[in-house]
Image: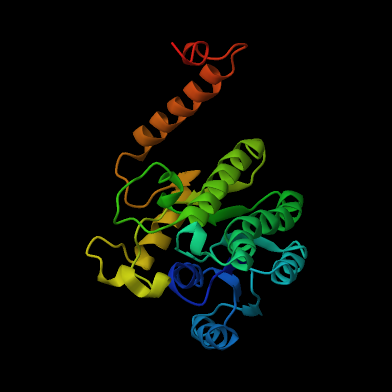
Length: 263
């Protein structure tokens, strides 16, 4: 059996680790995360299942970390990129340290774009490949006023960027063999955000999230929301709303409500 190489970021725990476990039977792996010790221990578990495993410690919240992983992808042999690394940084914007703004946006929004850019030439040259970016249902929460939702200005902005990036990229690559998917998990029972998801009754397991994503990739889904039953109808409604905004807003004159604002 031919084994292809998958590179997974944020691979030391949670959803990233479950992707690795699911892929280990028929892929060799490049595992990327900040914690070298955890990566090393996890690599041994996967090697015992027959996978060849490279460990690449890197902090994707830094441009140096992105460059290190992009350099590995530039070798051209990776056929599946799972861009999963991320951090919540949940806080009102006024409470976020200015130095953390760049770091959080770099990790959550810039890194996926740079890594996909690094992976694409090798995939296109080989005539095969797949890209999964992990976003969040919170990408669609900009208008949500539910007080139970986390303070998420930076996170929602970054994940919305990832959604737009991956959906647009899918159209760009439509005439190529490269498959793309953006994953939209909801609450997941992992150590993310101090592990609060583990105490939420409706949280999905990371195993189910990763399994749904890979099943969706096989089904040809560009968007995968693991808990959404009627996904096709929801996406049709989203496309209709986007079209209404784009076509309705592109007019040569302002809307009527702006013409006599004092009336």
